[in-house]
Image (cartoon, rainbow over all chains, first blue to last red; front, side):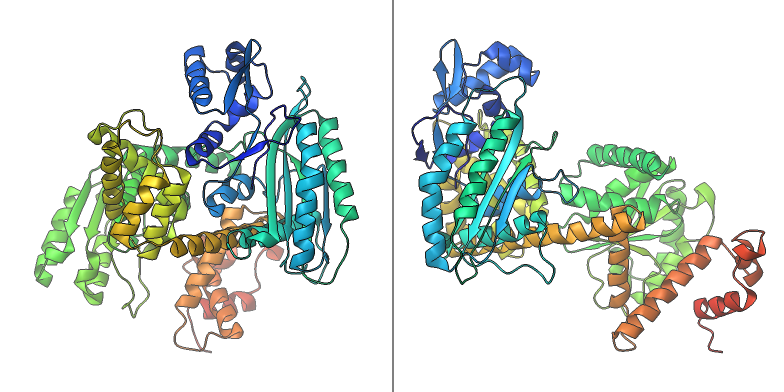
Length: 250
Length: 370
C-alpha cells in the first residue's frame, strides 16, 4: 500500500519501506500536506499552520534529515516517493478509514462500484493494470500546483478477489465502499491472500476540478474492467476530507 | 435543551477525568455515559457497584466517580474507603459501616473488596448505607472483582470495567502515557515515543496473554523504554526493530500471532462501524441521542443475562424487558398509588391511562397474578 503525496512527480516515484520515515509521514501529515510540491517557505508554513517559526523550522529540519522533504527554490518541497505501510493494517485503517468514513459524513464527489469482476487471476490482472495505467496519471494530476481554491480530498480505491456479495437489496455506494474496503483489507492482512487484493488510500490537496478529473480517471478504469464469474469486486470513491477530521498522529 | 445540558455535563465530566488522570479514550467515553446515567442523573441516591478484574482500573473509576460527585453534584465531603475484606465479624461490619458513613458525610463511601462479604451481608450493608437523606448520606460505591457467583440481582447499579485486553484504543493511550513517565526516569531524551507498529505489537501481547492489568502493561512499557535508553544515539522513536525481539523473548510472541491479530482486528473494526451506523440510524429514526439507543441495547442485553428461571425465548425476553420498562415508568412517575400513577400524565382524562389499563400496569409492575 502506498499513500500519494502532493509531490511533483512526473516519473513514477520509488517505493520506500522504512518504519521511522513512515512514522514521520503519519506524525507530520498536516505539515507535509502544507509543504506540498513547493517551494513553500517556513514563513508560509507558519501562516498555514498557525504555529511559531522556531517550532515549524525544527520540524521541517527533521523531515529534511529523513529525506521526506527537500529544499526547492526558496523553500521546501516533498520528496516524491511512495511510502509502503509500516504498521498493522488495523491501526492504519482505524485512522484513515474508520474514523473518517462516518455514516453521517459527506457523500462522495465521485465513485463507482463493480461486482462480478472474476476470480483471483482476473483480479490480479486488474491490479497490475491499475499499477500500470491508472495510478501514474492520478499521481501526476494530484501533483499539480495548488491554488487558493485547493481543498483536501481523500481517494479510496479497493479491489478484492474474494468479496462477499451485496445484501438482498443492492448497495448504496457508501455501503458498497465499506463492503469492498473490508474485503480488501482482510485479504491484505493475510500474507497468502494479499496478492488478490489492493487497497489504495490517498489524501491530496488539489483544486476541485482536479479532483473531478481524478474521479474521471478512476471511473474510466472501472468501466473498462472486464466482467467475469467470481467474487471479484472493486470500488473507488473520492470524498472531501472532513474538516477537523484530519488524522491526529498517535 | 438536551444538547445543551448534556454537553455541559460532558465538559465537566472530562475535566473530572483529567483531574484524576484517567487515561484511555474507550474507558473515558464509556464511563462518561455510565456516571451520567447511574450517578449524576439519580443525584447519587443509588449505590453504584464497580466491577472488574484485578488491575483493570476499578479504583481509578471510583476516584473519577468521587470527582464527578464533587463537581457535578456539589458534594463537599471526603472519599472514605472501607476495606470489607478485612472485616471478619458481622458486628464488626455494622460498626465499621456506621463509622465510615459518618466520616464520609456529604462525600463518598467506598466499600472496597465488597465481594468478600457474601451475598447476605452485602445486601445488609447496602440497605444500611441507604439510610438517611441529604448530606448525611454519602454516595455509596462498592468495588468487586467478580460477580459470577451471584444468585440474586444486585440492588446496586453496576459499572463494569472492561479488562485491559478488551480495550484496544486504551492500550495505545496507556502505552503513550507510560512512555512519558518511563522515558523521564530512563533519561531517554529526544525520543518521541513508540511507533504505531510497536504499539500494535505490545497490544497483541496484551490480548494474547489475556492481560487485564494496567499495572503489568506499565511494567512492560518501562522495561522497553529502559532497553531503548541503552541504545546510542537515542532513537527518534522506539520501533518494532527493538520491540519485537523483546516481546518474542519475554512474551513468546510470534510473527503468526501478530498477523492473525491484525487480520482479526481489521474485520472487527469494520463490523463495529457497521453496528455503529445502525445505532445512528435508529437514533435519527426515533429522535433520541445515539448514546441512549446504545444504553437501551446494553440494558436489554443485561436483562437477558438475568433470565435464568425460564428459557431465553423471544416471548420471555420481550415480556421481561417490557416489565422492566414498566417498572422504570412507575419509578419515573414517583407514584405510590394507582391514582398517583394516573394523575402523573395530566389533568385531562384523555391524557391518562384508563383505570383498567392502570390496573393491568400495576399488576405487571408488582407481579400480581390475578
